[in-house]
Amino acid sequence: MSELVARFPQLAHTLAHVDLRVSETPVERWNVSGVSLLVKRDDRSAPLLGGNKVRALEYLLAGVGAGDTVLTVGATGSTHALAVAEYARSLGAECEVITWPQETNAVSRATSARLNAVARVTSAGSVASAYLIATVRRARRRVAWVPAGGSVALGALGHVNAALELVAQLRRDALPLPSTIVVPLGSGGTVAGMLVGFALAGATTRVVGVRVVPGIVANRWHVLRLARQTRRLLSQLAGGPLPALDATRLEIEQGAYGGAYGRETDDGRKAASALRSSGGPRLDGTYSAKALGVAMARARRAPDEDVLFWLTFDGRWLADDDVPNGESDG
Image 1: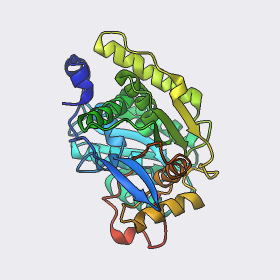
Image 2: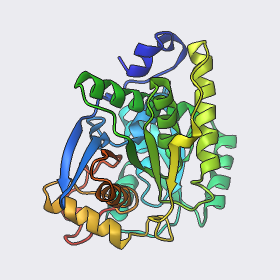
Image 3: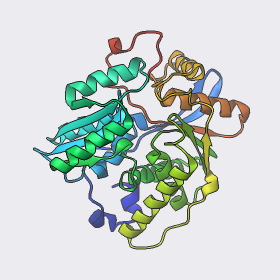
Image 4: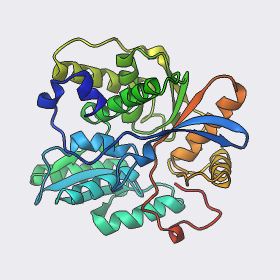
């Protein structure tokens, strides 16, 4: 049973859900280049393909089955699109993805290759044209639509559950909640859901979203708007009022972006390389490496203050020869 349903049992009847075998992900203590960090291993969220996206898909793919077509959009090499395609296929459905160009790196190219193997991919010249094509597809035939990043209120409920899960497992182990959680910020669903989840738990944790996309997409107004929509939807489904959001608990780190989505940064490369040298997993240069770099910098500045790095990427599907040695992942 999820922490969300344990807290609001009526959701078992009011919230449609498909079992994608998401399970509680471990919290570990890492030491990277002399920096001590807590890490939430959401890369281990599910056996088929882990990462943060599958948490949203348990709600967004509810009702999808054999013979259906799932449609989504995303940048070239989108891990969101790959997750949609893999899980749609696991349910017997087909998947169509409309993509737009981005700067590529080793892992985004590997992701794109894998996506082309499991989905019908149409390349568009821009974000606007991708959405136009998707709108025409949706008008012409019945499809199950999954928005970019899965970042709508329904999908964000998966990340509400993730925040509640973290609180429950730390309390179970008699460990204090970290004062700061550092997580990549793209389309916003993960961060928005966390804000709602921590408010439900009465936690005072600060959520630092490390922006990895243009500011027109990832900004304070957008994240808080999505968090409020998520809270409102949950209140309706749960049948009662919920604690208010505390907007002061959201911080957006602007300095790790690098100037373009998918563009690796020196700090991200160094953080990913240091982690690999310490025996840790590969990171993607688009999201996780940048967030780890920020988490390590914050932990260095305040060594007595526990910082938790939320690892959203799953690279288990990457063959060793898909990512050349010496390149960080994206």
